[in-house]
Each structure stands twice: as structure tokens, then as C-alpha cells.
Amino acid sequence: MPYSYTNKKGIVYYLHSREVKLRGGKVQTIYYFAREVRPGALDEVPAGYKVVETARTGMPILKKA
Image (tube, rainbow, N blue to C red; front, side, top):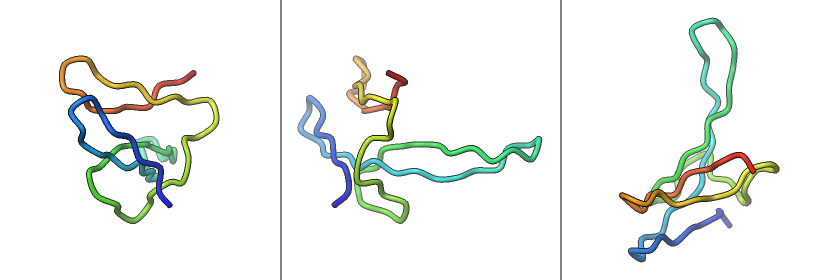
């Protein structure tokens, strides 16, 4: 089951990851939240990260612990 987070407004977000290729050719993993479950959904928060909520919009983001 994908990791879900409910923000202060009651909206449920699901954690996803994707590997992107940067201009220099390096491959980097990005993490993002979406309102629906998409391909690339994760079951748990990656090690070394924590979920925080932005004060202005209530959107969850991952921050290094």
C-alpha cells in the first residue's frame, strides 16, 4: 500500500519517486507527492528523510532528516 499523508486541510497525498537524467548525464532520484496513486508510488518514506508540510499551502514535501 502506498505511503499516504493527510495535510491540515484533510487532503490525502501519496508519495512517489522517479529517476530523471540531468543535463550532465547524471541520473538522480526525485521524490514528490500527488493526490492520486500513480506508477512509481512508494510504500514508505526513504531512509534519511522526513515529511514536513509547507506552512503557506499545506503541501507535503520530503526534507532530509
